[in-house]
Image (tube, rainbow, N blue to C red):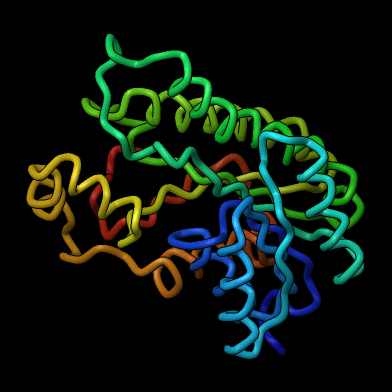
Length: 254
């Protein structure tokens, strides 16, 4: 398959559905070999979808909180594509859209947020570094407006997403001399996680809809995925340490 990522090897964590699946499909449509790294076998369904569309990829059973699983996913990419050109850490806690006031957060919930979002990002960065350096690659982390303006109902989610911004900026400084680009994407898309957030907080949907100038929620594959593809391409070779907000204008305070 031709495209701006033709011949590239890409690993996308948390790509079994929703936003991660959209990113994987968008990367594959531009010619990348995509390793769908997810702990559940819905990753295999994502691979079936991208192959049906003419793309190529494989599923690697991967819990990002386990360093060995991340190593295995990267090895699968290197074996199939000849190297790792890009790593996208999209995985978040399955409880990420669960509202909870700080005084009611228990250690299990905060540990899950930190383990998947932060420890997972750290594992991805450490494991990917030598491969990305060898191919002047790209590293992308997914953040959120909750990281930049806070969230009244999702303080733990806002905390870890904010920490990812600090981590990405630090990596951009450290890895710039190595030829590696590090960026973040802050999306707003119609995903199962967003739908769950609407169910948990019935006032959220109308409140959010009023704040989107373009008037609709983005599609993971056709609206968010292409923005990630751009950051993984040579067109973004002089872009690093930045947060690309892809949300129809909902957040303009960056």
